[in-house]
Image (cartoon, rainbow, N blue to C red; front, side, top):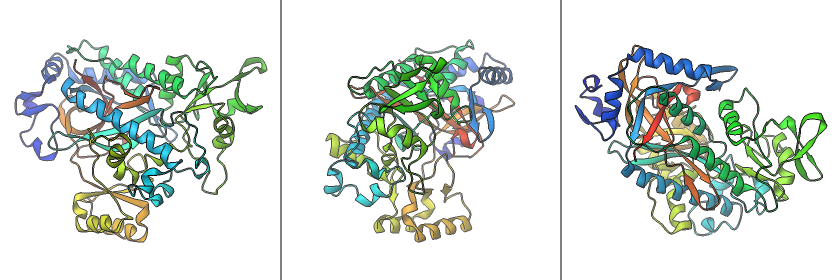
Length: 470
C-alpha cells in the first residue's frame, strides 16, 4: 500500500491514510497489514458478490444497482471523534431549535440573524405549519455531510434533515468487511447502536398516550432509491413495512390494513417516502400530506422525520447554522460549516462574482449532486452560464467555497490502489434526551471516478466501512 502512494498526492486535498510518504496515520498500519495478506481482486469480487446476493442495492430510476463497498476501510481516531461527535450533536440540537422557532415566534428573525425571506423561500418550508408545528421532536434523524479541508479540519458541507439515508448501508459495509479475516484494531461498534438509536427516536416522537410499539416504516415501495434501508429498518426493529396504500385515517386516527380486513392503529411513523412536501407545485395538498396531516397535527400521530423539517436543510439556511448554535445554545460551534454565501444578499453576491473561480455554485433546491458547477474545473461557458442564472434569479442558488475533499486509498478493478475523494455521513438521532450521534462513525462515501468530487450513490459513488478507534 505504501509503495502505491504517489508523493504528489498532497496536491489535491488531505490524505486520510498517510501523514507523509511511508508514514501511515494512526490505525492505518492495521489496514496496510490486512491488505498485504489478500489477493485484492478476489477480495473485491467477494465483497461485491456478497452484497449483491444479500440485496444491498441503491436504486437509480428503474434500475437496481448493487451498492458498492470499497474494501479499504477509513480510520478515525478517538481523539478526532471526541470533537466531531459532540460537534454534530450540538449542531443537530441547534437545527431542531431552529425548526420550531421558524414555525413559531421566529426569535432568530427578530434578532436579525436569519432573514424571513430565506425561511419563506426555502423549498422545504411548509406555510401550513406556521404556529401549528407539534412540540415533539421534528428532526428524528439527521444525516450530516462532513468533509475535511486540506489542513485536516472537519467541516459540515450540508445538513440532510428530511429523509436522510445511509445508516443501513454503513451497517452493510461493516458486515461485508467483518466476514473477511481482516486484522482490526479495537474499534467502536455501529450496527446495533444505529438501530437502537432509531428505536429511541421513534419512542421520542410518540405522542402522549401513544404506544411506540405501534410504529411502522413508511416507504414508496421497492423502486424507492434507498428501499434496502427501509426494509432493514423495519426488519431490525420488527416493525411493519408499509406503503401509503396500506394506510388510512379512521375517526381521526391513522390505521394500517392487516390480514382478514383488520385495522391496526398506528401511533408513530418513520417516514421514508420521497415526497416530503405538504403541498405540491399546484398549491394542492400532496397525497402523503392528505393522508398523515390530520392525525399528526391533532397529536394522535408521531412522525420521524416530520413535515416541514426541510426548512432547516435548505442550502441557503446552511449559511446561518453557526449563528444558530450561538443564538439557541449560547455556545461556539465545535465543527464549523463550509462557508456558504446567500446570493440574495448583495454583499455575498458581489463577493461570489469577485471570487467565482474559488467557488462551487449549487442550485439551492437540488439534491444528489445534480446541477453543481465547480467553477475552478468548469469551462468558461459553464461558469458564465451559471453566473447569468444567478443574476436572473439569485434566490435559486448558493455559493460555497471550494473544499478539496480529502482523499483515501481506494481499490480499483485490477486490485491496485488509487486516491479517491471521500466525505463522511454520520447520523444524529433525536432520542428524547438530546441528540445522539452514533459513536461508531457512519458511512464514508467515496467518489469512485478519478478526480470526481461527487460521492453520492445516485451519481455512481460508493461506500467504505468507517472505523472509529477506541
